[in-house]
Structures are given as C-alpha cells and as structure tokens.
Amino acid sequence: MGSPFDLFSEASHPDYKGISDEQYENRMLLQRAMVRNGFEPIDCEWWHFTLKDEPYPDTYFAFPVSSDYLKR
View (cartoon, rainbow, N blue to C red):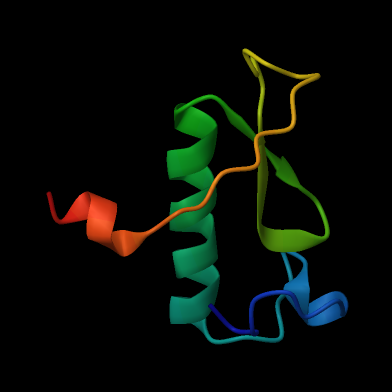
C-alpha cells in the first residue's frame, strides 16, 4: 500500500504520488470498493473509512474479538 498502517505523514494520504503505480492502484482499489459499499474515505489516511449511514452513531461497542469465533 506504500506506507505502514497508522503512519501519520504525507505518504499516508490516499492520493500520494511518491509510491509505485501498483501501490497507488491498490489504494484506489480499496477506496473504490469501500465507497461502493457505503463508506466515506478520509483524505489523510488511505486505510481509514467511515460508514455513511452508521446505524448506531452514538453507541460505543466494547466487546472482545477473537479469531476462534470465526472458526466455528
């Protein structure tokens, strides 16, 4: 993707051009998929999206997540 996750620099902007063509296209592929499915991108982080029609905007969910659950 051209930068590590949670790197807060110019290189993290989705439209940053100082990366390879493949890395840039990977960012755009992710962005298109997320936007197509109801998410809005954040202009300074290629990995960060917000659900447009969040069904519980004022609720904070705190529960454990385990990969064991997915194996059921």
